[in-house]
Length: 343
Image 1 (cartoon, rainbow, N blue to C red):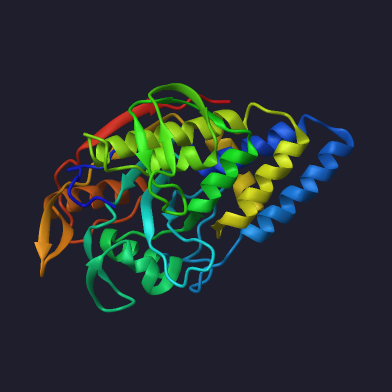
Image 2 (tube, rainbow, N blue to C red; image 1 turned 90 degrees about the vertical axis):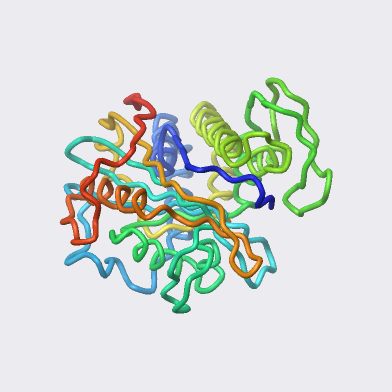
């Protein structure tokens, strides 16, 4: 990774969240009808059960008096992308996005946490890069760290590894991406020069899509450019996965998901969200600013206290949580990214 190129703010703007993709794919299968539906519906429930992994804490955050009811409550989801590979004994959280969902306003707020942010990691009792929290204690440690940083409950999580991105793209037959710059970078096995691409609209396989999304060295925009490319890949996966009707491809897609994706949200809970997802109006970005710093020769991203306080205020407002004494009362800097089309 290239620590020399950093963004002063993180601005992810995925059009739809992972559960919408899952529900949409299921609905696509539903219209196929008959025996095909019966087969794939059964496969879907098997996949969902395999992907569902409960947290050590149980079904409720310690910051909640009671578990959320998705039919009426506002809720939060932590989306995590890990660098976990087969045989690894330790891995890190490469991407962390906190999404808060407000049922009344029909809005989603997205906060991307820079992976090198210097934060307190409760599971070890000292400050370190937030992406190390996953290595220290898996998703449980990462969620605990994020809850401590933002002072909000994390109700659900969705975690996918690098192999999952490769497998999902290959399962849908590749994705069409307008490559913005020449690529000569590592593949998923970290082989130098493993993926080479020229600019222009083209169909990428799984290895190429992952490399395009991960590459940082050659992008003059640094992390900003990386974020834009990740958005391209995510949107292309959504477009492709909801456009095909082949039962064989759907079966491969679910296999790819079950092997590489985990969540504590059950299939039943995902279906409960369907009315909300269909009525969703806007997706907002919350900027989390900071500065580059070195401590004992190691690079860190030092979060700006005022920006962090403002972000906490906005997230708490969206979740209808009371502010604490140390929360900022200023208005957070928010970008209204898009109006989400209803299906």
